[in-house]
Image (cartoon, rainbow, N blue to C red; front, side, top):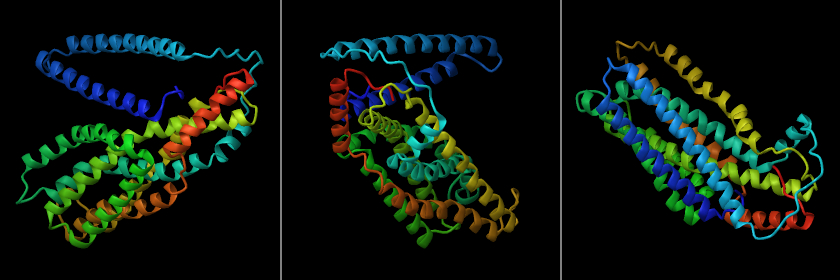
Length: 337
């Protein structure tokens, strides 16, 4: 709903994150308390019942949102009776290519997606090879691994506090600058033989990066859809098919392939350093350390450059929202991007 203000959207997203965190915890506790490994048939029935409840709640919530939107509509707008034009792939590609903020977003997001995917995939390897040792026990390492995800979820909820005040645009920029500084400090003063500094970097980097990406992703998607709506309204293209659903697909199409880049680099580095799971050579340890620290260092610099071209700040989105409403009312039709 693009009639929602930025503050309302942030509050809506934050409340959803809180509910997801609490429900996930309750369901996990119920599953652990009630069911046993030998009782998988009843556990499967529990999952089926849970899926049915979720579907019903989704349908009810969607109906409530539709009712809320209709109740907030105070001005009658005559529906657009013109037939919808067919979706033309060349026009769609041109629209996305000319969307400067989407290009800036993709330049940032594909690097962030690569970082997060690689960090999550190699997390246990980093912990076992760079942190586990005489000063940090296996139990402490397992505790770190078990706490990172819930701490990231909690941090994602807390991110909405600064987002309401300064917007997600500045929060992303602050993340990239902090990752750059943090990586540089770890590179200069850390080493594979210093597990405590490595642990501090790993925890801070993973939690902050995952939290900001989780909090800002859908807000940015919504703003870019809003800008596309506005461009279509200005060009009198209100009878064209919606492009809103294509933003998620286009983002995945352009960013997901980048997830395989760092694993390929890691395979080359580990092969060159003669990495072996059962042995710890100095060259392999340094190779893992550089794989942990250097990608955030280089990627953060590129992300700062790309994100500096993103212009959908709160003031601009408010203007786009009011202008879109004015154009829609003036034309007597609703846009459908």
